[in-house]
Length: 194
Image (cartoon, rainbow, N blue to C red; front, side, top):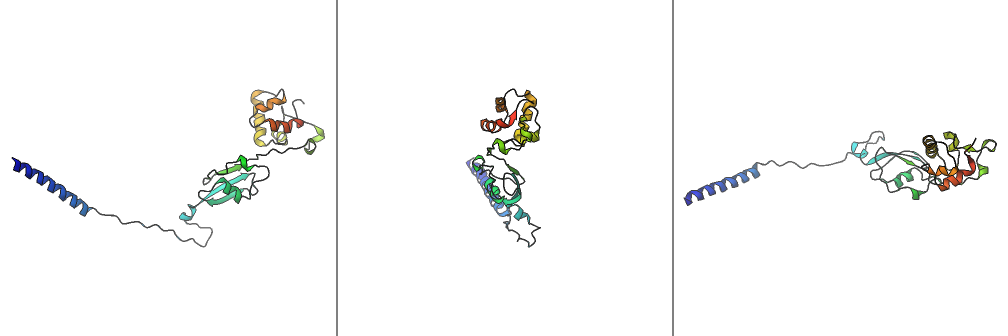
């Protein structure tokens, strides 16, 4: 009985070893691949696919000296885009921006004005000294106020349309984007009445 048992185990082990050897011999190994970059062509109009993968194209606008579309290396940051666009204008404080934000191919970066200019009443050109009525002023009239751009002017109009007319100047502080400093800079130029 033991001899049959030994024969069965021996046969099984032999078949297993033969299978492993056959698998190792019969297994077809692949050939290694080689990576290479095509040389750049002399024409600036045609770029190889490998070259285009090394750069991104972004559109930067707003408070930069030379807004436009620029090509930058992959992994560039907002600081790099601002630098290639000639730097910031005097209306933007770099401390108010995330200069380390990573740029993506095909993205648009708008640099908003972050400094509020203090304008004296005499430097604003109002026709015959009239004040701007924030309860009925249109977008262009509101934009003429110091520190008020398109976004804040639209916010004032939207707030007025949703909540009714302003009854006192302090209600402007409830408008998104209007703070104490902006209210202080425009209060001498606005009115609530006709």
